Image 1 (tube, rainbow, N blue to C red):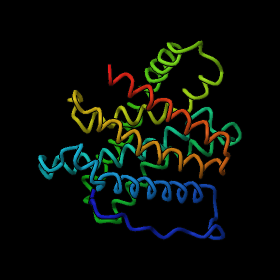
Image 2 (tube, helix red, strand yellow):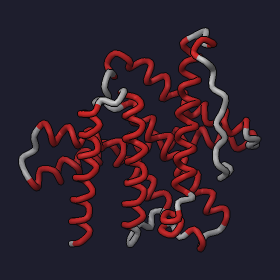
Image 3 (cartoon, rainbow, N blue to C red):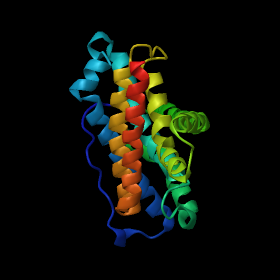
Length: 239
């Protein structure tokens, strides 16, 4: 995918919608554009460029890393739409699942409009699906590890469980993206992981604010969970 700043696509006015399918497709298009834009900003951040050691890598490898950031942001949205603690999810489960499933196609359409060769479009759709399934599986291990870490300091209570649940999508994607960007060679790359987690955390909070309509208490809980995780991570890395 081109690493140029994504051009904002044309979005239909709500009055133009004639079906629920159009609403789903247009929502997925908007979320895909948001994900691609955020990934672009992450990639061109000078700190990321340094931590990812991009100057030492080939153009092919730089492109691969950029693509992992794009896929990471897209899959973070997809996992967030699945989050059981999402406000109003019970009443909108089917709609949220439709949007989640429409995101890979939305990205492929965007790439097609940018002139991406047809032979690469199937690969992109396959990559998004593969990473989503991978990170969805990893959620169970992330949740178990977080529960173990939380219970080391004190008895696990509902508040602690709520923080853990809020962090699961973010942690699963941050850990996976870091692993793929480093091609599994993550030793000594802790600062890169912290950068990815911090940047994806901001995107995650922004998305939840947008989706849940600025429900301050819930968003504050997510921000608190991210801060607590960073504090514990720093303590572990100093040992």
